[in-house]
Every structure is written in structure tokens, then in C-alpha cells.
Amino acid sequence: MCVNRRDDSWISQCKLRDVRRCATIPYVLPGMTILTVASLRAENPATKNFIDVVNRLRRRRAAGPVSWGTAVKFLAARKFDISRAVGLYEQHEATRHREGLVSFDPGVEPLKSELDTGKFTILPTRDATGAAIAVFTARMHCPQVSSHQTTLQGVVYQLDVALESVDTQRSGLVFIYDMSDSKYSSFDYDLSQKILTLLKVRLHRLLMITD
Image (cartoon, rainbow, N blue to C red):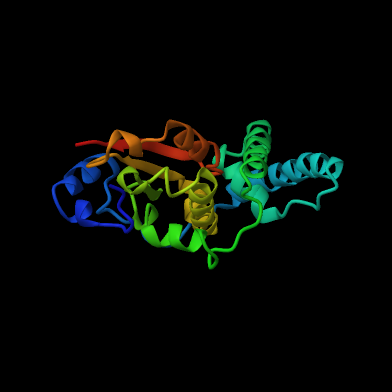
């Protein structure tokens, strides 16, 4: 049987111990991000170079220029290694176009209902290193009800919002795949691979919770 709404009891009961041990959820860093002059000087030319390379690629597809903010997100995900950041960008864009994730409205069905399930959630706290914490609850995934496209739209929408935070861009993401109380039919390997491909953020840790 598929669950259609999020039940956060696993956070308040025994499984909280597992998450604390793995992701140190109770520890939250201050909201201030400290940028040094040296780091800004190092990042500025890297960002310009990334934009030059990516915009050349986009012009071939008659697409508009990439923004400075978008460039920083991909560079931060690869520690400002331009070559690796461009590779991540190309992979990310290819997946978004292939899966129909270019344009969507969170207030329109079926995405609205997908978001309401809480299947994928960015927790309102961070781990001890400052990384954001995302949880995908497998037992809430019903392949018969939610298509890959709708599920991925829900993931991408929330990740895009989370990555507006400079702290998340710099500290990365802890991804928790919660398989507790889920049936085999709820596990979708192909979907899991697509989600990981769409992460335009440094994956700090990938954790799995089982019974």
C-alpha cells in the first residue's frame, strides 16, 4: 500500500538515533557565512572562465547566457575546478532536458500533490559541517502513481530553492535515503540514479537508513 502523506514520526522515534549518528542533525551552524578576501579573489576569475566556456556551448544551441549565480553554484559543487564544473553543468542540463525538467509550476497538478506528500524534503537544519540535509523517504514513493518526471520535478524544485543559500552552495548536501518500513516495490534504482545526477551541489555524504 502506498502512503500519500509524509509521516515524520521516524524523526521523533527510534530512527532519529540513526540520523543523529550519521548526519549529526541536532548541531546547527550559525547562519552567517564568512567570505575571505583571498577566497573571493580566487573564485572571481574561475567564475568568469566558467561563464565564457558555458556561454559558448549555449550559443551553439541558441540559448541565452548563464547567470553569475548559476555559475557559482556549479563551481562550488566542484570546489571551483572549472573543467569538472563544466562537466557537471553539461550532465545536469542534459538530464533536465531529457526528463522534461526545464519548466514546471509547483502550484499545478500533478507536481502540487507530489510536493504535498513530503516524499523529498530539505530539513530546516544543517549537519555539523554546515551542509544542508535532504531526505528521500522511499516508502512514500509509489511508482504506479508518481511518474519519474513528476518525482524528479519535486526534487529539482526543492533543490533549486535550497541552492539559493550561499551556505548550501559552499558546504554541500547530506543526502539521506530512508528505506525504513518500505516495500521492495518502493525502491526505484533508476530513479535514485537520476536524482543523484541532478545534484548541482557538492554531495557531502550519502546515507541510507534501513530497518
